[in-house]
Amino acid sequence: MAAPLEAGPPRPEAARSPLSSSRRALVLNATFEPLGIVSSRRAVLLVLDTKAELVHTTERVFRAERMTVPEPSVVRLVRYVQIPRHYRVAVNRRTVFARDSSRCQYCGSAAENLDHVIPRSKGGPHTWENVVAACRRCNTRKEDRLPHEAGMVLRNTPVAPRHRVQLLALFGGGSEDWNTYLGEDADRREQLTA
Image 1 (cartoon, helix red, strand yellow):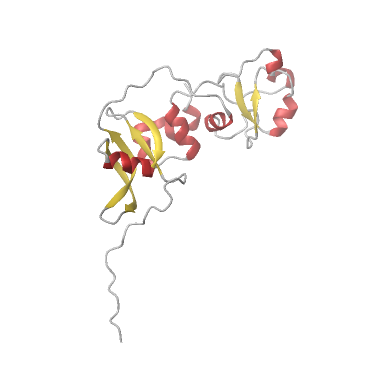
Image 2: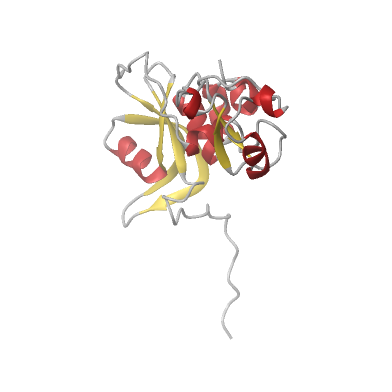
């Protein structure tokens, strides 16, 4: 009869799909300011190339033949990277839905469309200050009119997001480790905008 197997210490879960949405890492500049979000596989490569250092890890690990590396949640670059200060995030469906928490800005239900507050046919620009997420019902009701002409009121004034990384984190769901570096605003979507 074979001897019973002894239970050793619990092994960390292996990271299997580094490209899934939960397998992402926040990249910080050398000054601890957020720079971007990368796959956890890319973050491991930055650490192995000594271009970054681990700040926070998950319970998962990457295994190779001769080493085991914890899966990064937050990494910090070793050298400072200059970033442009006047960068504006592109206005598209994905980013507007992230800013507006995928909620209609007229009634609060699930958003399906983008709406130009001042319609394009009346000279309204395609800018952060004029585009909101809207449900199909409100978008159809508003048609080619201004909100007050359709008897509608915006819940929030549309403005450009302050920080691209915060917007990306909200869109894909960030880790709790990220909140320290993204600021308290990362938890409150309505305060994401300046």
